[in-house]
Image 1 (cartoon, rainbow, N blue to C red):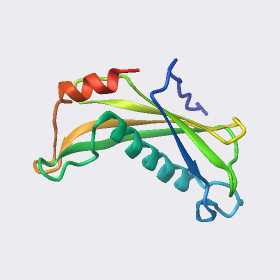
Image 2 (image 1 turned 180 degrees about the vertical axis):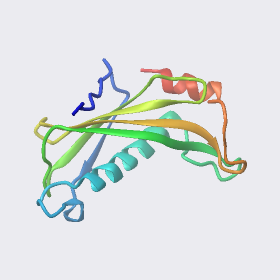
Image 3 (image 1 turned 30 degrees about the horizontal axis):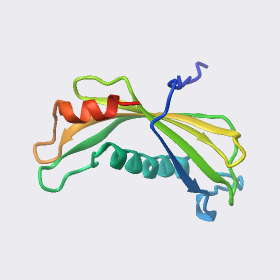
Amino acid sequence: MARIKIVLPATFRLTVVIPVRITDLNYGAHLGNDALLSILHEARVQFFRELGLREVDPASGLGTIMADVAIEYKGEAFHGDVLHIQLAATDLNKYGFDVVYWVKNQDGREIARAKTGMLCFDYNTRKLRPLPPAVAAQAAMP
């Protein structure tokens, strides 16, 4: 079976620190895959804030929508671990970009690599919109 391989960029724009909560654990007593996706969402919201971008602007209805997600698990995380999530925007295109995440614990042990494909979306018309030049410029900055 082919495995997903996430290519990490040379530099990351932001590091977000998020602790693993007891409610993030699954029956294996480690970080659940669903909880990791939620943690990545929180990290992405903070990353977008750094870029001056909102997931949805209530005034205009413009925002982003996730087109795809890929997660490559590298190790377990447990309750009490503190995740350090490095984020970068890559593969900018007419309608969006990818957000790449590199997740490590407080000891620097790799937990996961992930990528989400984010597209510019008009929530009023329910259609894709071109990525605004100002957002593209911000996302492209290292």
